[in-house]
Length: 344
Image (cartoon, rainbow, N blue to C red; front, top):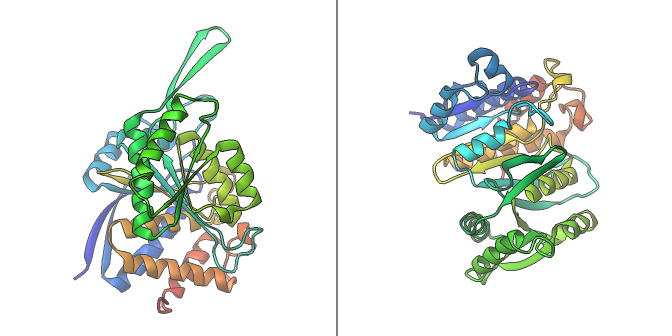
């Protein structure tokens, strides 16, 4: 008898529905082989949802996530300098998804300037500069408030160190700008230090955000787990994605104590939407994180191994990584590769 998981599926817009359909196909094929079934509750968000429901995040979507506690989300367009608020940020705040977790690892067979990268980005997800407290003081003068709290800084530090202990990671490095923002970043740094003292078996270091960027580009191998507040995490996670081929390849997870949303971190790419050109790898690797989260590690390993086999073979890749195949052809190749036994 198969185990059934109810998952909220947010296809997104632009290329979102295409990559979501590809990932659903792969997961259902993997689940069929491992006794896992998925009951997908599909819900729109963003511009598509507004056209249908008059809301950018429909009440039905909130209710679905509250019921299922797990969601898989495709890319949703966020307007720049106007329009509606970020769907991503809104959902993270709504469900207190305080930990943004992004592993950065190379895929086999894909050449980059930085082979063998293995980094973990842990980003505080609910406050900092992303609280959205902005107002016009007088015409031509806008103030944006950055909020850092002891509670949030402590729990994201605990998340980073607990993960490191569980997974055998060797070192946590806190990224900050406490030399200038002595109170806000100083508080984040102080909380990190206090948590680090409870994990003597894990190395601990600190680097200023601008120096961190230089050090990463010079030698990313010196870092292991990078811990930081919201805005720095947004920037650093994109920078690190370039080491392994770009945002189209790396996964993302937003984790809280009650709910989790797994998402592709790239944009909605409306210029190629509907053309069967999009690469579903980022959302697929996010789905692998989701499978581990719901304790379906056998299925997760099967999908990950098949994905890596397809990249290693290099015959059925999408154009963004040097191939000539379309979205669904790539998905079909991953499904076919799952017939190969998972290797240790």
